[in-house]
Amino acid sequence: MSALTSDQKLVRMANQIASFFRSYPDEEAVAGIHKHIVAFWTPKMRHALENFGPTEGSGLDPLALKAITEEPPQSNSPVRAATHDPALQGAGASDAG
Image 1: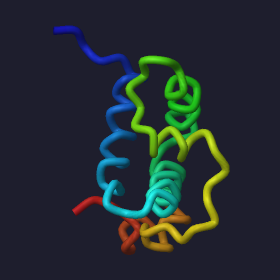
Image 2: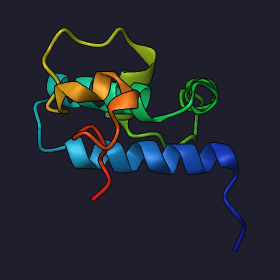
Image 3: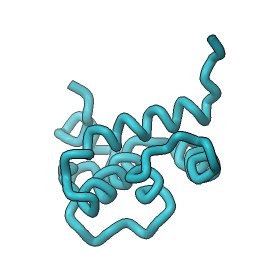
């Protein structure tokens, strides 16, 4: 069994986020995925996913792909509004616990 590359790990993480939002309408799901990645991922992680995700065979979920390659929809995200400021983590902005 081969170990996952860091790019594959990012795809797996993004796909898990997309899986969470799958039950929402597509526009809300894309907005939620985008908002989550911007709020909780480092710029280095986002840049790596933006470079690797759109490549053929990356395995990135189509909703996650839209969230990283297109202008975020104006739709309200189902993610709490506090997530726009990661400094609020622990004040209801964290997705942990």
